[in-house]
Amino acid sequence: MHTLGTLMGLLLATNTAEAARQADPHEQDPCSFEGLLPGAGSESLQSAEALNLFAYEPGYGKAATSAEAISLAHADAEARLLARLSCAEVASGASAYCDQVRASVVAYRGNTRQVHKKTWEACATAAVPDATMGLLEQAGATLDAEMAALGAELTAAASGGPIYLMTTVWESGCAAGTVGADVSARLRGAFSRLPQKPTLLTGVAKAPADLRRVRLVLDEQRGTVLVSASILDGDCATERPVGSLGFPAQLLGVAAGDLGRCATDALLGTTAWGSCAGALQVEVDLPTMLDGRVGVYCPGEVVEPVVRVSQPARVQVYAVNAKGEAWLYFPAEGQSDLVERELSLGPQDVLYDPTTGEERLVAVAVPADGTFGATRAWQGWCKAPGTWQDDWIPAGAASVGANFLVLPPGQGACADGPRTLPVHSSPPRCGG
Image (cartoon, rainbow, N blue to C red; front, top):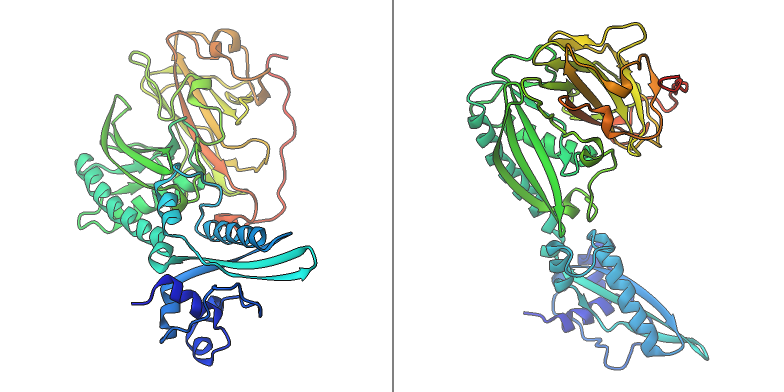
């Protein structure tokens, strides 16, 4: 067995035809200055195949002394390798995955040369075993396996009823955006591979009585993203926890402390799936796109939100951006705010605004003989004064938020969409 010190000998011996023939062109050591550090090691391995056991990155440094230059080169090489493995900005102890990566990094002594009387430059190499390079791929396979088990548990908990995947959210109540869409897509894939596949609905404009809504909540903790799954029975009266799983944050590019960018539940005084006030319950549904995107839309697409109440109620619906600014969305000018059971808000064009962040449709309902207080005279599309206020949800009201994210034109799933899109005009101020 060859040691890592001996491997350095191979990395430096780049002029050997055997090494050039067997090694991948991207795996050639660039640190081949003519003047080697004394004792750096120029031995050759008996076989160049060992080169393929590791992945490595070069680093460079320049300083007044040889020792300082090589120290900078070592630090640069490790930083480049950590960036390649999605750990460059992650502090030690903040991620089990990145701690495992750091523990496997090997720094070689490298080479230096004097380029001026007071200037030395250095090149050094940092390497990790190939097994380390495959950690995220392995984590992805583990996530899919655990998602398959979760899909089976949710199907059993649904007791044969049709399933509707709600928008995946963070603990804050904010939509989880593209990360949530990826998690939802993996769960959809798990459902599709079950021997007894559940019926998945992409919209619930006419919700059957035995409908089961699946709610996924994400929470990032010390480099691990926890996924909690629950089922809402019937008309939101009961939420039952079903299962949970976790994966490294780097697998889907989740930043430390990510809670989304929206008006949170704490700000709105509501929840991502709805709150019930006595016998009155309200929900607002945004349809899932046909390609499986949940809560993620492309500019120019058309959606048709649906408001549903458990008994006749007066309803107001707002669109709220990440800063808590709100626009009255329903009722329209001259339209009654009374909803008997279910009401479509009509087809709506999806627009992209880079300043809004993740958005929420917030429905507030009071009993049919109740009143909205300060907002009771608001009608038509208008901009609410200031930011969201607690008294916009009167005592005895029910409220719910539906989360969604509009991707920029040409990004991700929207790559084939239009690049230039219209924007809406500014609405009047609510209340005059």
